[in-house]
Structure formats: structure tokens, C-alpha cells
Image 1 (cartoon, rainbow, N blue to C red):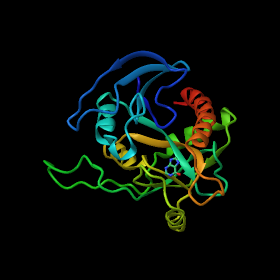
Image 2 (image 1 turned 90 degrees about the vertical axis):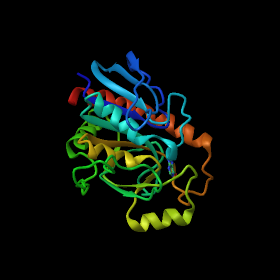
Image 3 (image 1 turned 30 degrees about the vertical axis):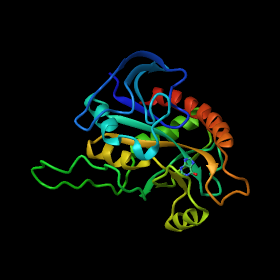
Image 4 (image 1 turned 30 degrees about the horizontal axis):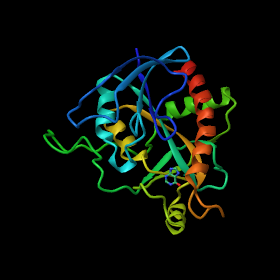
Length: 246
Ligand code: HPA
């Protein structure tokens, strides 16, 4: 049974090493997911794969249909979701290519369809989101990193920004004062929607650049691409070991 899914972010629109068994186009009451649900095998384990930005990486962060993606996984009886995501490093130890398994989120996004609980409800529903990530799955990611000898930063606060532009240096200073260690554009509402449907969800984030104002160099797409590739190599090793643990 494929009860574990991987949502691929930037750098993981396709999944090298994944043996694809079949693909299924799915419709949900919330619209169409970013791409077909891919059933495959990775390091001997059945997994479902879904590229968050589409198979050709054409859907920007604020246009992703997060509800359709999470609903589709839930409908396929997925129980656990590893969300791979590129981020900028704010904390001084989170250098480009370093992997981070964050333990908290601050949501700065706006105008996104962010809940399944909006109408036709027997009563208003509020999820407990004190701990936004599933502790067991986070622990397994950290253990897998150890086994794969991949250096990870454990913990940290993910700041979810609206994008698609990168931030100003002042915005990064502000969210650092709020407590953010990394900054990305896709972590929310994805994590909260997963919790609404009781899916265990954790982030495997790759720092692909220093956040704005944290380096003297300009943030170029070329440098991001290079760091993403190197980081993805580590993610693939880590996920390989994770398959033995889940
Ligand atoms: N900011 C926001 N999202 C990102 C960044 C960043 O610097 N790098 C990769 N995703």
C-alpha cells in the first residue's frame, strides 16, 4: 500500500530513481491537482509522487491548487506526506545546499484558498496547529539523514511568504525578528490543509540561497539552480533511507 507521498518542489518536478508504475489524472471537488498522481517505487518502497509546481514546473507558488493536491492524496489513502521545498537560509548555519527539517511555521501568505472547512459544515471546526509538523515523521526524516550521512539542520521556523518575488532585505530582517530561520513560498497553506485531513506532514527543506540581504552576492537563478541540484542529491539519499524507516 502506498501510504506515503512525496510532494516535490523546485528541483523535484520529476524524481530521478523513482520507478514509475502508473500515473493517474485525478479531479477533486476543489479542482485539479498540479499534475497526475504518480504511483511508483523508490528504494523498494511504494510511494506516491506529486510535483507541486506541475510536471514542467510551470505553476508559481501563489497559483498552486493546494487544496486539490492535498485532497487528491487523502483520497488515495495517503497517510504521510513528505513535502520537499526549496527555501532561502536566514539563520547563519543554514548555508545553501543544507537540508533543514523545520519544527515551526509562521504564515505570511494571503489570498490563498487555505481551508477545507468553509461551508456546509455541521459546526465550525478549528484544527490544533500548535505543532504544525508531525513529530514522528520529522523524527524519521532526521534519522534517515543520519543513516544517509547527510548533514541536516534540525528544527527551525519556516516563514511562508507570498512570492513569487523574492523578499526585500528589510522583510527578511523583520521575519528574522519574528523568529524565522528559513523562508519559502509554498509551506502554507499546504501544511495546514494536510492537518485538516489528518495527514502526517513534515518538511524536508533545502536551502538554495542566502535570504535577501544575508550575502553580498546577488541572488541569481543560476546560483539557485546549482545549489538546488546539489541539495537534491542529498534529499534523494535521505529519502532512500527514509523508505527503510516508514
Ligand atoms: N525566499 C523565498 N522563497 C525561496 C527563497 C527565498 O529566498 N529561496 C527559495 N525559495
